[in-house]
Length: 537
Ligand code: FAD
Image 1: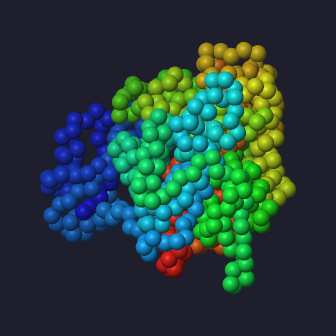
Image 2: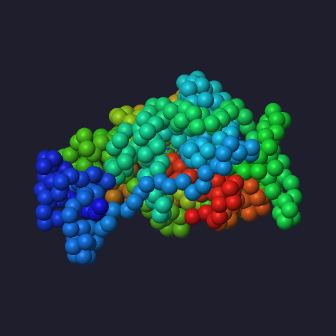
C-alpha cells in the first residue's frame, strides 16, 4: 500500500478529477483509493485549493517508491495493537479517576484488554450534568460538582469538539481515538478531514455510547464519587506505593494501580495530592479574554468569494503576536460559529471558554486571546498558579456584578483605555449575561498591555479583527493545567509507585485528542505493570 501526499485540486473539482490526478501521479490508473486526509490551502482566498493524501494499492509499488519522491511513500500501518492482556479474571482491578477524554480512553483500553477497570468521577452522568450546566447558563446557578469542568465526558463535553493536535504520535494512538469516536457515533469524516470537529450534542451521545462499551467489557462506572485521599504503604524496596484511593464518603477502594486523569480544574485534588507528597511543580499556562466577531467577517476575510462553501464550513483563524513587553499573545481554542460559555467550577469565580455545535452556524466566531505566563509570574510553590488563577477569576466575578454575568468590553473601548458603558453591533453570546465594564481590571497589567498591542497587529493579518464593536468577555484562565504532576518513563508518579498521572490536569495533554492519546499511553503502562509485561513503548 502506498501513501500519496499533496494531490492538489481546485475547490470545486468534479469527483473524477481525483482519479485523473492520481493516475497522473502514478503514471497509470489506480483501481481505487482511500482518502486519508483532506485539507485546504486558503492562503489565496480567490483560489482555494484542496490538498489530498490518499492510500492506494497498485502493482509495481517498488518501482514507484524507487523514484524517491517525497510525495509517494509506503503507507504506515496505523492499526492499534494491545500490549498486554489480563491473565483471566484478575482479583485486582485498576482504578481510573476521571471520565474526561483521558480517563475515557484509559478505561476503554483497560476494559478492552480484560482488566475490568473501576472508573470514578466526582460529577454526574452526562445527561444530568447537562441540566446542571444549563442551570448556570440560564439562571446563574453554579453546581460546584457538576458543570462544564466536572462530570461524565470531562471538560471537552460542552465544547467545539476540535480534534486536531500537534503532538508526536509514533504509534498512531490518535487514529485509535478517532476510530473509537466514529464507532461511538462521530461522523466518519473525522478520520480524514484536516481539522475535524464534533460539536457538543454528538459528544454527549458518544460519551454515553463509550460508557456502554466499557460496561459491556466488565468495566464499572461510579459517578458522584470524588477521590479525596490516597492510601500509601511502603513497598518491599522501601519506595512509597499506592494501596488504595479514599472517596469523599470515606469509602476506601483498594488498588495498587490508579490512573489520575482529573483535568486542570480539580484544584482541591491538586492540594490533596500535594499534601500527600505526590511530586508536582508549577508549570506555565496562559491567561486572557474571549473575543467575538461576526462569523461572516471571518469567513469573508479567510475565504473571500468562497465564504459559505460547504467543504470549507465556518472559517477559523490562528494568530500569534510577540509583544514588546516580551510576552506572546495568541488565539486559543477558536470556535467558529459558536458561543462563549460560562466555564466556572468554583463559587464566586468566573471563567470563560467556547463551544459550538457540529453545524457551527451560530452568528459569532469566538476565540481566547491569551498571553503566556510562567511560574516566575506567580512564585510560591507548586500550587501558586492555582492561587493566581483564582485571584483573577474572583476579580472577573466581581466586575461582572457578582452574579456569574461576565465582564465585557468593546474592542474599541479596550484599545482606547476606557470602560465600556454599552455594547455595539456584535451581541455577546455568553449566558447568563454580560456587564459592560473595563476588562483590564480583571487582568494583570502586562497581560492587558500585551493584548492591547496584539489586537491591531492581528488586524493587519485578519482585517477587521480590531473592529471597534467586536466584544471581549473574561477571564480566560483555564487554558491548561497550572501544575505538572511528575511521572517517569513508566508513567508512574516519581514519588508514588502505582499512581499514573495522566492527561491535561497532570500536564501531559492539551485538548481532547491529546488527552485521549495520553489515556491510551498510560493504560498501556498500567496493563504492563499489572502483568509484569516489560517497559512501556
Ligand atoms: P478533563 O476532561 O478535565 O476530565 C477530568 C475529569 O476528572 C472530570 O470529569 C472531573 O469531573 C473528574 N475529576 C476531577 N477530580 C476528580 C476527583 N478528585 N475524583 C473523581 N473525579 C475527578 N479541547 C479540544 O481539543 N477541542 C476543543 O474544541 C475544546 N473545547 C473546549 C471547550 C471548553 C468549554 C472546555 C472547558 C475545554 C475545551 N477543550 C477543548 C479542552 C479539553 O476539553 C481538555 O483538554 C480535555 O477535556 C482534557 O481531558 P482530561 O481527560 O485530561 O481532563
